[in-house]
Amino acid sequence: MRVDIVTLFPEMCEIVLKTSIVGRAEAKGLIETHCHQIRDYTKNRQKQTDDCPYGGGQGKVLFAQPIYDCLRHIQAETEPVKPHVVFLTPGGKTYDEAAARRLAEYPCLTLVCGHYEGIDERVIEETADEEISIGDYVLTGGELAALVVADSVLRLQPGVLKSPECYEDESYWDGLLEYPQYVHPAVWEGREVPEVLRSGNHGKIAEWKKEQQIARTKERRPDLYERWLKNHPEEDMK
Ligand code: 6GU
Image (cartoon, rainbow, N blue to C red):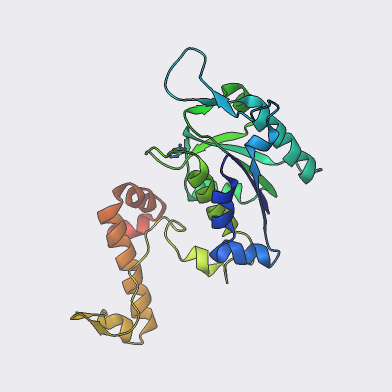
């Protein structure tokens, strides 16, 4: 999979993408990432990327033209594949693991970061396949949101994680939160590792982990718990 990020802050995105698991995956040739500076596509002398909006209001709005030209440049690079284009905006649909799994199927994904007050609506209408927000809070720009989306889709690519269990085992895969984890020492600051985990009884351990997942989800995320129960009616009897 190839991911392109269109941004005023490519260095901010590059440093994250070249770090840790995603960085190693790219070094191994399993994935490809590119960050593009919107300013490089401006056509005015001052390399201005934004201005005050029509109709007045706070802040500045990014011009359509440099974003459009940058997207055309990316499309020429990925030819004959047409990238799936996502704009990261606070007004988009809320992102979740189901969306990550869906986006992970595209061979080329282009993420466009909004900044300041927004982006000229016409370039969104002209080029966006969808608009995504990562949650109900406000960020100064779309970069962190684009990196969240990039990380969550790239970790699903074959070979990036050691084995599929690595992502099947984690929170959200089966709609339940993770069970708590422990590593030695067996006693730390007077707190003991649960006895069952040291019992060597793998059946009992699996049962305990599942119980922990269900109890945590019920307590912390009643919304996820209700959805999970609907898909696992047999669990309601317990
Ligand atoms: Cl995509 N952008 C901004 N600026 N804030 C956000 C967001 C995106 N998603 C959640 N908050």
